[in-house]
Length: 226
Image (tube, rainbow, N blue to C red; front, side):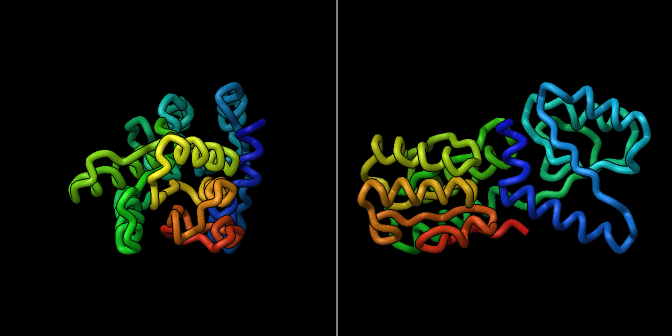
């Protein structure tokens, strides 16, 4: 149920769906959305085997997810949204996640932050791992050897909980890179509930440039993911 809620509430999924629909409509091709999780992959594979689709846009990249390889082995044309966690000979579309995290770090440092920290995405997803590595490795090269880090889950509630825990353990933090706008929205709430001003006491940068950034107060600085 949690995954299904994300499909219909996370701005990331909505933007991909809207983009795919816009590209397919002029060709009179209809987009079928099949939400799935680890417990019902066999239903998806059975549906694909029955010849109902001409191609697959696969939004899936958890490290242990067998679906990308299963779809590839069916021989159906497929494109993976973001780099697959496991190497398979399939096309994928992605942005430079590490460079985006570097842009976030540069912004925090330009604001004068000297105690940066990050709420990462799930570390079994390439984007979560790449954003964390990009942020920490860039800061390490500038002399920031110990960057407080906590692993999030790309949800609003997860971002709020992570921010509370992070600031409780590291009250000196004055700059926060949150690896998705949805998590950043929750993190902003936690920071302000703790009596810290944004961006005066704690500057916050998200990732995605999604509609969630516009829901934040103050409005969220964010790295754009087209």
